[in-house]
Structures are given as C-alpha cells and as structure tokens.
Length: 81
Image (cartoon, rainbow, N blue to C red; front, side):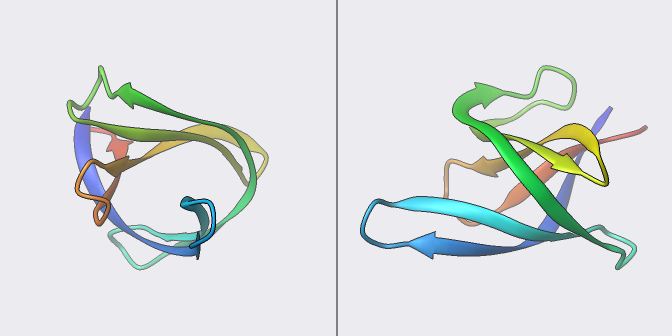
C-alpha cells in the first residue's frame, strides 16, 4: 500500500484541542463525508508508513482509518498500490 495525502475539511475545537474530520477529498476530487468517528489515538500506519493521530471512522458504512500527521497539517490514508 502507499500513503495517499488527502484534503480534509475539519472542525477545530480550540477549547479542548480536538480536530474533527468532516469531509475527505480523495486525490481524484471525489468527496466522502465522515459518518462517524469511533476512536482517535496516536498510531502508525503499518501498511503505508507514517505516524500520527489515527482516526477510526465510518465512511459510506465502512470502517476505515485516516491519519493526521504530527505536523498537524497533512492528512493521509492507506491507498492501494
């Protein structure tokens, strides 16, 4: 798998520092709404490489992961090779 950087529209809660992803824009321009966030924790992507805050989310009824890199700016997903 490869690391794919994606655009993410997110809410930033300044009082508690939580970042809540809302919409992910894939590299082809397709947008996906985040239905639900299940978990947020610091973790590595063992398949694509990289580390950061891993969000376990549901998109279109399927569980997947997105990462916010340690720089707090760039988001990535595990893309197929």
